[in-house]
Length: 158
Image 1 (cartoon, rainbow, N blue to C red):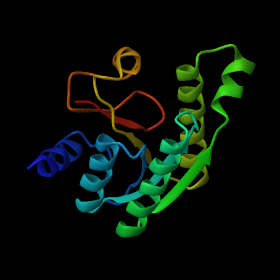
Image 2 (image 1 turned 45 degrees about the vertical axis):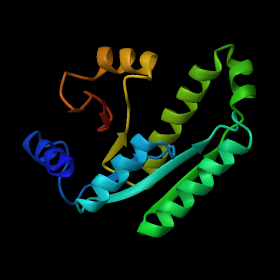
Image 3 (image 1 turned 60 degrees about the vertical axis):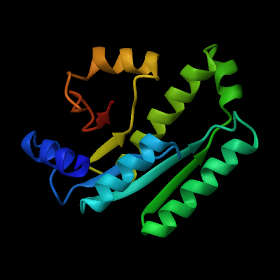
Image 4 (image 1 turned 30 degrees about the horizontal axis):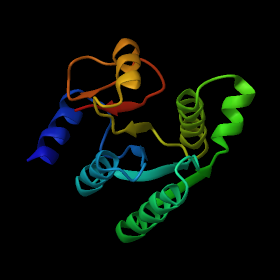
């Protein structure tokens, strides 16, 4: 049911076509996994991008391992990056959260361009309050999927 609703919304709003290459930001959390599975099962050409920020010790490595296994299972190309987020934050004099956000979105854009993806899909929920506020201000309307005005990226929100 949700897959059908999302597919209809994508088609109705011309977010991307059935032959578009979609780079899905895949953290390993339930939202990003659901997004990847819905788009993949709906027949969209998906590749995944996973960032390991090494902020949660072994748990960060378990997330990466899970993501690798998931992509292997569904035969989805996976791009990974390791970041020294703490060092980057210190060098830039910014918070860890802001550092991770900058590293993540800059890298997503690099991968999108390098591998000629048409859009970046990011699962996003209201618990991500700072990003939710920024994304709503910058990009989003009140729709379940929204298309920002720049960079041919889409964001989902719940």
